[in-house]
Image (cartoon, rainbow, N blue to C red; front, top):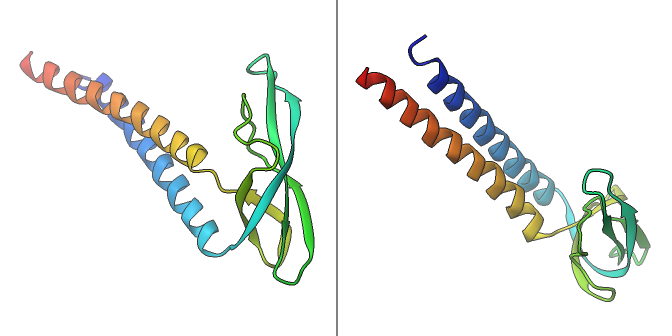
Length: 138
């Protein structure tokens, strides 16, 4: 019981670091099995965000496969304000067998969740270690 709080904080830190690592390696796997194409932002589709209480925007992107086939998709990534302007060129990752399942590569989005999970995990780790060491003094 003496170290229960510390153990909880350390466990949460471990879980957050695990999720962070899983997301990172999952993205690497997707990118390594995908084909890259140059896309162009046609528009920013406006959506109402219930969580945020304001509008969010998802880029609608058009790209072409090496065979000359055009595809257009709306990114699952929604931001406010929009990350891209109409006419911006973006890197698109897609599965050659299912080009309709494409995604926009955005280093900001990839690093954002990496840093958020890592930062929160680090806070829990520091609190857990501090709590553990404080309880040892008792």
